[in-house]
Each structure stands twice: as C-alpha cells, then as structure tokens.
Image (cartoon, rainbow, N blue to C red):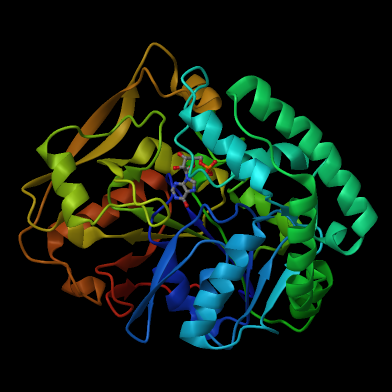
Length: 427
Ligand code: IMP
C-alpha cells in the first residue's frame, strides 16, 4: 500500500510538478516541503485565477490537505506573509492548515543583499541564482549560526544572533562591495513583529508527521527545484544550495529514509534550464527558440527565459537511479507535436569515461550523441489515454522507458488537469 509518496523533478527544475501535485491532491491528506525556499515557482489556476506559489507547498490550494514546511526549508518571513495573503485571497484562511517547523532557518535581508551583490560582481562566479538569499541562508545554516524560527521567541538570543550576523555581513558589504550597512535595531524590531504574526503557524513537524503516519494518512513529500540542482549530486557549482533529491527528504523533515513508499519522478519530454551552468543538449538554433516559444518556457519566479534543448537520457537515467524512481511522469509531450524528427541524447562523447563524468558532474566538455526518432503530426495535446496516442508518440515513450529502465506511469498532454494520461496511478 502506498501511503507516502515523494515527487521530484529529475532535470533542472520546472518539469511541471505543480500540475501533478494537483492531480494527486484528491487522495492526499498532507503535503510537506523538505528543502529550498521561495526560489521555487509553481503556477496554478484556482477557480480561474492564476496564483504562483514559491514557498508554500503547491497543495495548499486544496482545502482538505494539511501543509508543512520541514526543517530543511529556509524561510523568508516577508515572502511567507505575502504568499499567505495571496493564498487567502484565492482559497480563504489557511491558518490551521499550515505548520512551519520551529527548526527552520530564516532568510534575513542580509542574505538577500549578499546573494544579489555577489551575482552582480564581476569577480565572483555567477551562478544565475534567483537572488532570494537561498544560498547565503544555507551557508549560515551549515555554519551553525542561522537565526531559526524558535529564536524569534527568545528576544535576547535573537538580539545577540542578529548582532553577530550583522557584524560579519556589514563588514562584507562595506569592504568587499562598498555597500551600505543594515541597521541592527530596525532588523530586530522587524523580526519581533514577524514573530507575533508567525506564531499561529509554528509547530512540531516531526510529531505531527509521525501521527499522520501512524494513522495511515496519505502524505506527499513535495520536492522543489530538480535533481540536477542538488548541491551534492547536481552540476556543482551551478546548483541550488540544498539537497533537492530524494536523499534530502529524511533530514529535511525528520522521518526515516525507509518511510518513503513510492518515488515519483517528473521529467519534461525535452530539457530546460534557468540560470548559468552546463547543459549538453542545449539548442542555440531555431529549434531551441521553437521549444521555448511553444512550451512557454519563462521562469515562474524570476521571469527569465529558460534555455531549451533535447531530452538528455544520460542524465535522466542517472537521476532515475539515484532517486530510486518507481514511476516516471513525462510532461509537455504536446510541445513536440508537429516535429518531423525528435532527438534523444543517449550518450556523450568526451575524454572522460561516463563513470567519471557522472561522478564529477562536470559536463562542460561533453558532446551529446543523439538517437533520432520519428516525430508525429497527429496532435497529442489533450489526449487522456495511451491507446489514443499516435504510434510514434507511443514509441517515444517506450524508448524512454527502455533507456531509463523505469515505467512511464503518467504523461501530461497539456496545461489543464484533465490533459493527462494515467497508465498506473501511484496512490
Ligand atoms: P538559487 O536557488 O536562487 O541559489 O539559484 C541557484 C540555481 O538554481 C540557479 O541556476 C537558479 O536558476 C536555479 N533554481 C533555483 N530554483 C529553481 C526552480 O525552482 N526552478 C528552476 N531553477 C531553479
């Protein structure tokens, strides 16, 4: 029986996870985020209104689902309150339905400022971050100096932590960037105001999740970003600063690694990436522009255009294996409608062996080797059963299954919830 399911994007994020969460929602009791912060972007249409969630689990718009932010999430309180307001406008009051771990590290304005100053600098490697202070907040977390949610309720501890932090950050702002200082008293007061407002949402995530597990409730572990952006397993240093992979779930929530019954992976029928970093199958020609335009490939968080390329099954089969994926969902197959041929990268040419490439994840010097498969003219858009897909589209899916050694259990054929083929429902 599947009670707990993880949902993870297997590429560089933006695989269309929000829509799949929406699909599973009717059967879920709880959804938990375990990493990242408001760098994520899930666009949802609720009662005809568009809402974009960055920090809240995208399942929040389903009234029967209780949502959690586990200890592995870095929380900007400004962003949180903005999103709570936005969510409340569309779905009503969410108090009582959202629980934030008292162990979450907070993103403070100095994290955001340093992230942005670094990205603008000419001497520091540009990662193309979302500029939201994610990496800098995680630096403090592993440096054991974060201000955590629980510190908000201990004013003297909060004061000394902010004092210590600002001594460090203000010195960097002044000496490394010639920038202005952040005022300690003002920041302290802001934190105290936030603390009051946050109180109803703070809770004990480990305990609550245990209770849910003990009563056999259906729980979703909602991944943000994607497997190739994992700080340990991704294309370092062009990654986010958390463990976005399935490996991050246990420590990011406080469950056992054996508590995950089913791992659902999401991959686009092609590949996209925002920000800097290697991308072996990236297309710089008209085909790249075509995919970007037809797929509406613009970042939901920053509005940046996404880089586009062919499906890379070298990387996909690697992330399938690394994350113990039980079933795969292929999204946006309809974007490939009308193409004469479709390329799938199945190997790399490089001076390094494949084992060396995947161990280091240094992809700058690899050349993709492609297999070409026949495209199709009959639209897949909106189709809801595998049998109705044209035979070339079926072969494309079967090819992915063979190469990646995983069943494709869902196929998304358009943006609407019902534009989905379900071959084997995971819950
Ligand atoms: P950061 O997470 O803001 O530090 O950005 C690090 C890298 O991860 C950048 O290349 C971002 O564009 C990328 N990134 C962060 N969040 C997302 C996401 O939700 N989707 C896609 N890319 C992301």
